[in-house]
Image (tube, rainbow, N blue to C red; front, side, top):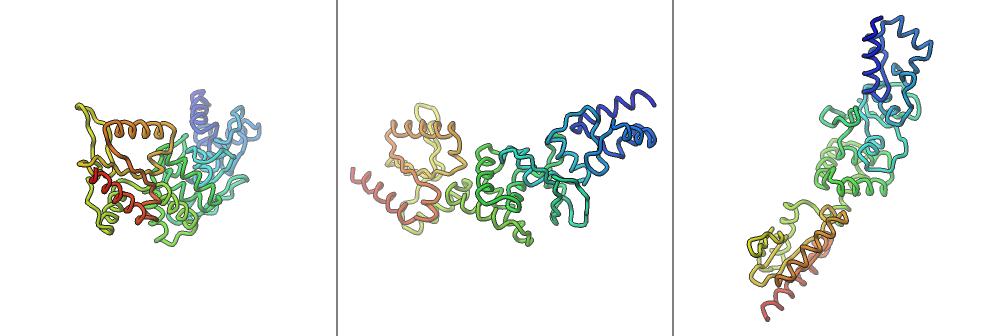
Length: 306
């Protein structure tokens, strides 16, 4: 056997967390030598048709990769969430396969049969095919309680792995296909929309409906404030003539200490330039529009009187 074949096997194993498949080992070593390596425990079986190269450390990444290789599967659910940093590491080994497959994975590996599994759902991470962050959040509704899914969604948004709108859109698509497990994810996403906000286009639509419904003067949306030739802030809705700013706070925009500090500094600069700033939460706009409208109307009246 050529020394280069052994070197190639070592290199391949390093790329796969110390693993090789039966086909890979046979192709490089030959069938008889591969069998001898198994007998001599130079190749140690970890999953059907997947071996660990002797001397390679046994790790959680290796266990997940072994399951994905054995089942020709996509890493998903809790394992994907761990890899993305969405949940606290706990050693889950979850992969997804199509419903027609019946792999015999060894514990603790679990294969989830998913009807809508496709190549567009997977991205490369840690040398494995893994569901993207948005799909991972939705899948978590199948295997974790509501509070855990909510926490994972919060982490994903705060680290900019995904947006609330992306998660909502995917949940709607999957729900139309009759996929089970979207209930928990859907409830978590809808609640986050109420307490956390949506994207700018949705915010503008909500403010437009509120202004029209309660017959308020029409504000300038996404109004930019400049001073002495320098940009100061962009305001969600503004009445520039009386320097009244309306801000709607959403989770995505204020979900880190840095964002919180930046937001307060920005507000202080506006106040120093003579602006009055009214702050509302996304829940205020959606659930209590009459209160929001009354406070805006009263602020306008005070400025007009002054």
